[in-house]
Image 1: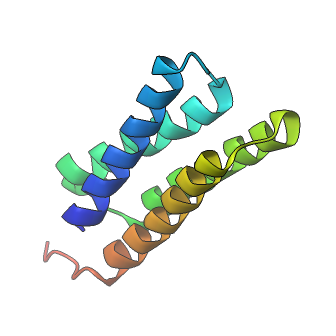
Image 2 (image 1 turned 90 degrees about the vertical axis):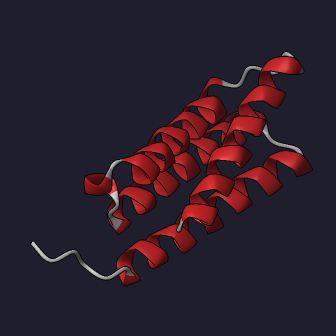
Length: 105
């Protein structure tokens, strides 16, 4: 879980930095990145947020925002790779969280 979450954080942070550095600010794509970043960070540091639905919701919102951006502006190969990797990693994280043993309360 920690490795997948760390990769999600790194991948989305790199995507945001690339957008800013190349002066290609795309609000919908960056909003999707921020949603995933906040969710992944929450999953990593807040035990109560470690739920499969958090990863699913983050992945879906990111995908929807990116699809809207693609419909409006198109996208390059690198963008497709970032979006696909984020979506797959969110699914993997959700499966890992769903299979995680529940704490005894």
